[in-house]
Length: 113
Length: 112
Image (cartoon, rainbow over all chains, first blue to last red; front, side, top):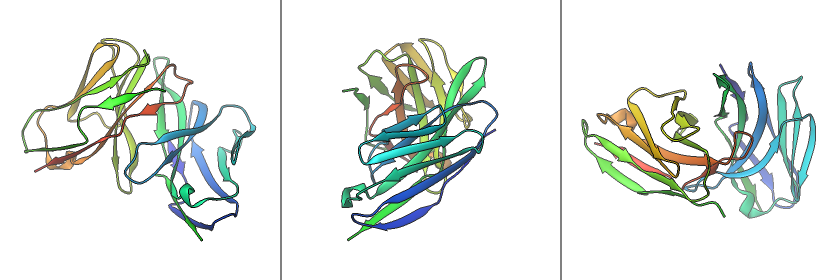
């Protein structure tokens, strides 16, 4: 089975940096995704990590440590439009060679002026 | 851009009805998925499919079935709708298992 934990809510100030953590426990880890979901909208893909280390993509970076079962999403130079839920999703083997994503409950980030 | 289209944004049905939710993608993706999203529970996988006429159960398949007769279309069926199936339903597709999933806009289903 899967166990994915991330904080329920966070608040940060416009222009600041925020780090959203995700810890997971899984038997057949095969990659970790981060998605952004604005209220009332579909999730959109932000980043993918399968090897240890940092992946940088503009203002957003994602880090993975497989040995610690830990990832974080780092958002720099926060803007008001970054107010959204951030979903951590772990990909693992579900059996018979197929894979599925299991999502955390999401972290609701509020950016304040 | 990948386009995943769900047939309805809002749907209201009655208990015991058979409900069909349709999803179509236009990028020739192999993989398609159905999730439901509930407050405090997050996104949970109902069923997924890696090929035409192929399906696999996700974490919460009870009360649901699926159909994938054509590569671009993946249907979710509620055999006999119940009030606990009131939820936001999201369809997604991906090119391969290592590729990100692209989501439709969702169907907010209410069962009365």
